[in-house]
Length: 470
Image (cartoon, rainbow, N blue to C red):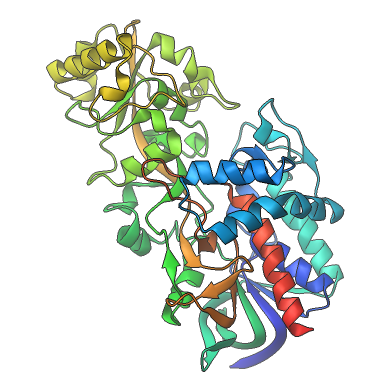
């Protein structure tokens, strides 16, 4: 067993890991990064991200109080107040720090949350849509600066367990090929993302049948950091929710149908039914919440979107990479019939029940009573469109999971907390390995933004480690 020594060791080389490592290195802290991917362009969610820098869909340069209010509104006050304040108050300066390191942003689209998008923006076609773009360029930029500061990235190296001395973390054990490494450090920072690709953990916390979810990610989120932290007594929070979108079921076997097109806008305009042709979720809460509801079903492949020509040619054409025509041009299946009876026949659904479900929905929409449907159909964020303009359409659905929202409990400095809310000395976490910010809310899943929270808390963790070292 080989032994290495470093002031700090960071697990994972996505945005959270590289921000933490670069900040540590510029503060004079000798830092080693462990990355399980072996390739130069190792897969990770940062590299594949759309690149929009926002907090709760607010621009990162908005007034901190406005951002704070947006977070609290979206989370319905469920997020830890210290984390909310740190994120809202720190994101503008964190973005400026990235810009000073050579990371470029560009405005893409008219929406406020796209005012700061990683440049160059992703392509809208092809499996290599990310290569040489946003997140890919960001990681290479940060890694270059880190290595110029004397930092080291050990690729092909997977952390196995934390090293504890009493109640303090003093390093970790890792494996690189056949070689076992013992790494001593004054601080360990867990930045290896969520557990979205670990089927056992997904089955424990997210879905009874995780194999029926589409991995809308780099498939590297194995939850190693979360598992290691749990072994040494760390507190875990909010593990039952994830960020993702509704996809066509064909995405399970057709890679041209993920991460786009999303079926969110079509579903939010029409209805989503199960195999019995009955609605089972609130379509008006948006794609992230619908994806979670679908994943939680006993059979996550039970869902089908029902809509008409007006929806397909209206909301179906929304977004940069719209469902219409991307779904069919990429080989996805769009069921079409001149009647609901005919559509039900193609789907193997009871025709009378589908007609009844649509009729009840249309009557509620016409009378302005959609919110009184069972289940409720919210209308505050997405308009409920009537389904009455032939031809009628259907798309069979699946939940696409991008990253898990819950994880290791941390304070506003990224210090990992034990089950008594006490910091575990020497142990930190940042990014999507952590919980306490996203996911909360009574009904609607609260998406805040993975890139931005990774940046802010990576910087805060590094600053705290450096202050203790001094």
